[in-house]
Length: 578
Image (cartoon, rainbow, N blue to C red; front, side, top):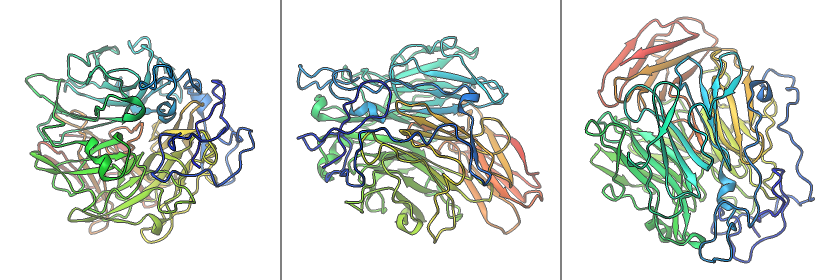
């Protein structure tokens, strides 16, 4: 038996489980041998709200400031058939009957869109309009959605900030659930946005319904212009219309700044062809795409965490081809890839890949994956070495140095509205080294979020140098946790690029605290990739030593330009120009 689709009323409250479907695919998001509800019994009562504003634990940790910051909103009601966003198109009598995809949603993206020095938030809803929350700089946010021209109601899937036209301000890309297209809102530089998705080639309007998921932003051909990958989760049954909306969109460049052409077929990307290979139902199941340089040759790979065994990594062959050697590289072994994040957790100078996935006790080979980068385009599965397999029904994930001790910890949001996943806790795994299990310190540090976690976002909302944590929920109030834990020194590097890649996405930032010592590396734009987009800045924890840093190095991807700074003082926001 698998977790069943809830049938409570649309009140926004946590549901109870009523049973399983005779199709064997009630959730639409399970393994070939679906995860059973075998861990707990269902009392019919909603779980305790452990994510409310309760006092932090004895040790310094995180403090809930959601209400004080003005972010305690309801993302939308919990729908049941026949009030779902999506129809079962194969049966005209089952309108509004396919609720499963909307259970995925809940996105948050951080960026300083108005360039006042403080990170703003774009937060999605199920029925819209979404929320553009401007950071006032005093610990609070104000809603400016209508004033910015973003008040159109929709069920938004993925969201990404990107300067697509290279004019220096941030535009907004959205995927949508239930519409027949994607959206691109172009920033006018005065706080307003105009929708231009169709004329700029982002809409991917096929006349058939989209189930839009995450968005990857990068420059795969190093021409300086940003490219996009828009993900989509499309089971042929019950959607019908065997079409793939997972698309690679190439930035056309100077001939049409901010416009895109679809090069999915030309670059050999065919997600629908994977389903029979991995024993999945017909369809395409993209969740979390990213452009990221994993072999340190300067050319960003295209990665995709995807459902039903279809996660992929395409190696970039100098911008001319994308080569899929996922299995040969030791990747793609998780069954239900959902969230994705990249970081050098072991301090060896290259980026490792964490993919979140469903865990269940009956099938212990399922669950999350930590893929350690061994170089030479090879990865090793070290999930069990680090004790990271079990995150429940896992979604958004992000590496972040939460303590400022110089290594990357790992945060994870989880949940699904059925037993035993209805009260999955946020995980905060503390990095205890590359060869030992990482303890979960969430409760000890005061993060007791047990609602339906989806997007997860470390960002410095109060600009005090440490990373706070925002957790987006599906149909419940989100949570903002202020970091009162970090005591070590820190450095934030903001790289300002030459047009058109003004936010320097793909740039690598390296820091050496001492000559001959270990290096910390960050790549801008490759943080959290399931319904969460982090700021394009590099944040470093530096420990207790207050001496100036030996070396800070920034390398831009398209130009190859490198800036090297020595004797950099700690505890500052450092701006470096290409």
